[in-house]
Image (cartoon, rainbow, N blue to C red):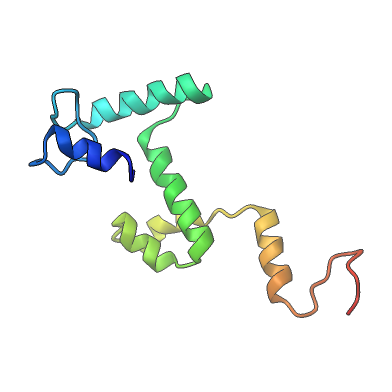
Length: 113
């Protein structure tokens, strides 16, 4: 983004859109969706869509901050229950958090103090 935004501003400085066409016009939702889908197929062999980016952003933010309320605000969710969808942490992450927080939690084979 640090590289892209200054270049993008050269095409049409009056428009603050992040993604624009070759003519400098704001891309519509369908154009963004098609570009993400094409890039996903070409680069990753996967069918990507914009909501996957939003979901990844929310999941990583929640994992690193543990602040569900902040994630709710950033995503613009009116109801915290909608944001709770992103709390699907994997078991290994939960075990790591438990082990680091619980004073008597020790895995088998861990050295005693």
